[in-house]
Image (tube, rainbow, N blue to C red; front, side):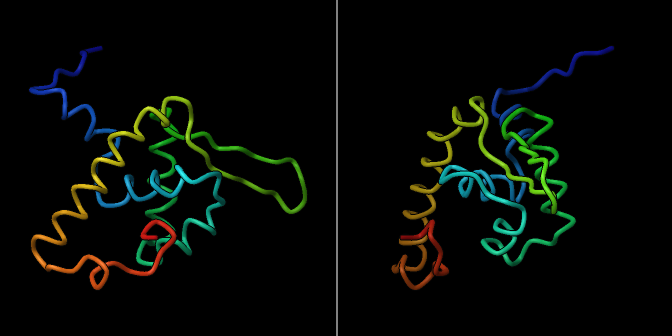
Length: 120
């Protein structure tokens, strides 16, 4: 098996958290466990297929845990793993940079952000 080589370390980071939705999912999970349906409500623009795919990839990379409760009906929750919690600094930095970018480009952060628990 050939080992993958990266040109720069940030490629390894983006391989795990890159894309449109993974950081958003992780930001929501920083606030606690969520069921798939809760995540879907928090991110109405994501398709169910894409949400499921992104959750699977994050789980495969060890960033989130999938908790299955043996009950009827079945219940599944997702949470950040210990490894996933190590991304909190990066995610907070991305949010802070995004705030400054919105203000720089649009002048008003409040008018540009959807109402969301993450934007309070």
